[in-house]
Image (cartoon, rainbow, N blue to C red; front, top):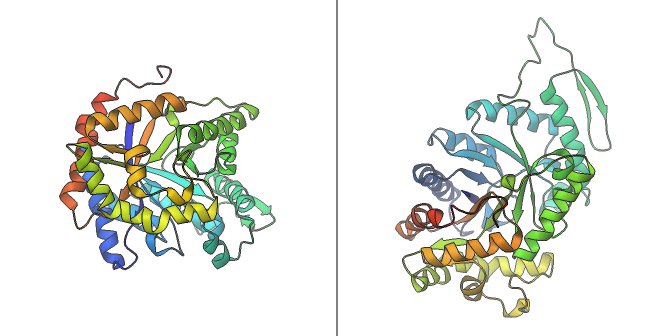
Length: 356
């Protein structure tokens, strides 16, 4: 099993953006030093709890401050920008990172973002059409495209202008990932149909199973083979020396505050789905989640919970830990990342495809 980090970023809305950016880059440096496989940077516009309108800027900055860790967008929101411009930025990032880059894309899920950009609920269609344009741009052959949302005329090579000439560094393009949060995610269906990587935001093993089933079915219907090794699963993780220390650092730290003040209500508003199976949403608290649902505790406890979730979901390749703003307790947060890699990872190293 591999490990990654997901930087939304989850931070205090009152925090200066520069401080949030510096924390994000610090976490990227720690991830690189500790041997994490990848770090994902999100894109959001209208929520102060996740101020990150341009993941490409963080990826570019982190590329200069890290050496080995793969830098990923989680995700570039295709409906909110012209796909030609995004295709070119993705090619530039591929070169800037030396190929240490995954181009995650998405449709966007926040209702306020939809209103901001006036996409009128057409985000899923716009993602599909945008991907059609982007993949043809990366191929480099001249084409004309007249779609429902965009029109493109990609010219043939011109000797005088010496272009268009830019191509991705990775062939035929950077790995593409699509994130999904709903049980039957449309994004996962698109990922399965096109052979892209799945990135899950799962609330339970049953929820994860349904996401994988939708992805695998779409891939099968398109004649594609899939591997659970490619599956990234994002989860809330915090590791400390003891269970009670970890629970205290969560419930009395920013991770607990983020859920109690924002995310629990956000889930209820958007889907009505409880974050704790069998528990009414009005009874859900961060402490309950830390004790019963999340991967929180001592290395032994977290390893046991990862193993159980792996087996119940059918298995996945990379566990991606959500990053929370612990600027007030940086040593505890770095220690959590360190324990995850040095003590938890060896305990779950036996979890491989086909052994669950």
